[in-house]
Image: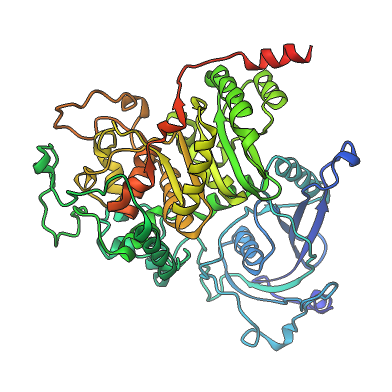
Length: 578
C-alpha cells in the first residue's frame, strides 16, 4: 500500500505522514434470557485512529458510539477537525479515499497525483461539526476501556441509532506544519454562513419577539422543513366550511382600550416591533404564522427524542388512551383507573392505554404496572431542558401527546381527575374529533385567555394579548387529537415547539404566577400563567378564529373533573385476588 512507500521516504521535520483508519465494533447488550429478549438494540462503537508512520510515533484516536453520531461523510470528516488541532497549530492539506459502495471494498488514493487532483474536504462545510475531543493513545487497552464505558452509557440511551451495514474506509492525508493554509474551526462560522446560522431557532435573536405579521418573523431557516401550505390551507378551508359551532366568535377587531385594559397597544401598523392586533382572516396566513415562524420550529434533537418515545409503543392503534401520574396524584389516579376499567375500556376496539411515570416511587410504579391494565413508561426528563422538571410548567404533557400521536389515529389525553359518566356520548365525541381534527375541553364559564396568560407568551407568537380577548381559555384536562397533517403541523408541532422553550411556556418562576385570582372587574391581564392551556388556546384561536367554538367544546355532557377524588382501587383489586 501507499503508506509503506511513504514510510520509507525521508521527509523534513515540517512534514508528518499519518495513516487513518476507521474501525467498527458491534457490541450487543447482555441478554439474561434469550427467550424473553428476541430483539434488542445493539451498540455500534467507532474508532477513527490517526497513526504517524513508523515506530515510536504519536497516535491519536477519536472514539464514539451510535448514540452520539453516525458514520456519514460529515461525521468522519469531523474527526479530522477534532484531531488535527491536537498535533499543533498547523495548516492542513488532506485528501480522502472513499470506498465504493459494497462490502469489503477499500478506497485508495494515489498520493503521487498530489493535491489538486483529489476531492478536498472544505473546513467550512456547514454540516460538519466538532463532535469529539481527541486524546493520545499509547496502548489499545485504553481504547477498549473507553469503548466499554461508551457501551454502558448507550445501554440507557433509549433512542440510540443502530446500523446494519459495515464501513471500512481508508483515509490518507498529509499535514504540513506552519503551511500556508489556515485551519478554520467548524464551530466558528465563516462570513458566508453567518446569515444562515443566525436564522436558526436555537440561536438567540429578536425573532421570538417579531410580530406574526412581519416578513422576518415568518422566514424559515434552510435547515427546517417546508410545509405544504396549499394542502394545509385546503384542509383548513374544508373544515371551516362545514364546522357549525355553538356560536361564531365576533368582535375580533377591538383594541385593549375598548376593554379598558391596562396594556399599551397603540403602536403604528407599520412599526416592525408592533405585535399583531388582529388575527388574520386569510387562511394561508393563518397556516404560515403557525408553521413557518422560526421560534415555533421543533429542534432536531427533540424530534429525535419524540421518535424514541413513540418507538416504545410497538404497533399502531386506532386509539391511544393517554395519561401521566406522579406520587402526589397516586390515589387520585387509582380512581381514574377504576373509571377507565368500568366505563371506557369495554367500549373501545383496537386501542392501548399508556401511562407516563412522572415521579412515582418504586412501590407505586410496581402497583400501577400490576393493576392498571396499561403500559407504563418513564418520562425522559434528562433528554429535555431544565424547565421540564418543573411539573407545573406542563411541558411534559404536550410532549407525551405529541409522542403518542405517532402511534395512533386518535390520541385521547385524560388527566387523573377526569371521570367519564356517559360512555356512549364519548363515542360521539370520538367521531367529532375524526371530522374536526381536535376536540379540546372547554368550560363556558371560563375567562378570556389574556387574563390567565403572561404577555411574554403572546410576544412569542407575535400577537397582542388584546387580539385574543374574544377567545376564552381552554382546559387541557381532556383532549382528542386526530391523525392528519393539519392537526400535526399547525397545532401539535407549534404547541410542542413552544413547550421545549422556557421563554414561551414557562418564562418566569412558575410558583410566582401559579395561582390565578378572581379577575371580575379587573383591568389587568397576565395575572397568572396557565402554560400549556394558554399556548393551545392561542394556537386554536389563530387557526380556527371565528369557528373556535367548534373545536373547543363543553364536555360536561359526558365527563366531569373531580380533583382530589381518591379511591383505594388497587387495594380492592388485591383483595379480590385473595
